[in-house]
Amino acid sequence: MQGSGVTNIARTAQWRAYLVGGLAATVTVLVVVIAWLQGAVSSRDANRGAGGAAPSAPAWSSAPSSAPPASPQHTPLDRQAVDRVFREYLDALAGQDMTAFRRATCPRLRSTLLGFALNGYYVARWRVLPYGIPADSDRFSLDVQITQRDPDSGQLAGDVTYQWMAERDADGNYWVCGWLNER
Image (cartoon, rainbow, N blue to C red; front, side, top):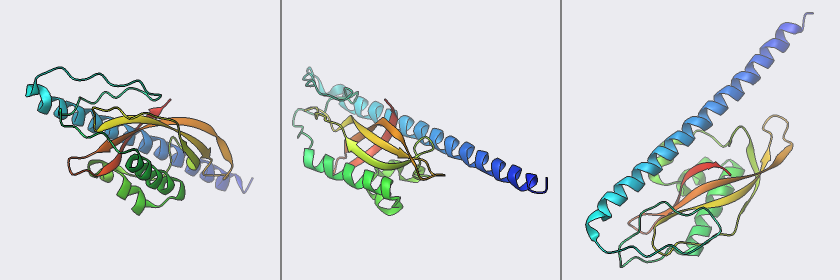
């Protein structure tokens, strides 16, 4: 019975770590969704007086963008730039490189980055699923298949699909700007 106190302390610490990790993930998701919604509202307000009907978005494999249409002189997003920023972001997430992770994350969300676990698991591998880019927006969502790794055992823990936002700012910089949800 001498070791039972140590075992209980270890179990308590493990549960506390799960609780803190889950809470951090929940807070991060809430902040991302709120920031994303605020960006969509402010962009919509800025375009409200532009007049004219917005062109319809093309069909594509990911979830449709809820971002407002851009101006008539809008330049479509560059697929290579989107791929490049997602590669940097997801490689940083998998490699637990906070410097690269922050660099690929949009500036308004950098302060919310708390760690590398998504719903309590690390990223072992990732694959961006096929996507289309809407012609009339600077923001859209895309799906990424993640192979999870258990942080305690190091064992693979299955595949999940998450959704992220890709965004281009007014200066032409491309960012990953928000982890939205598990699909």
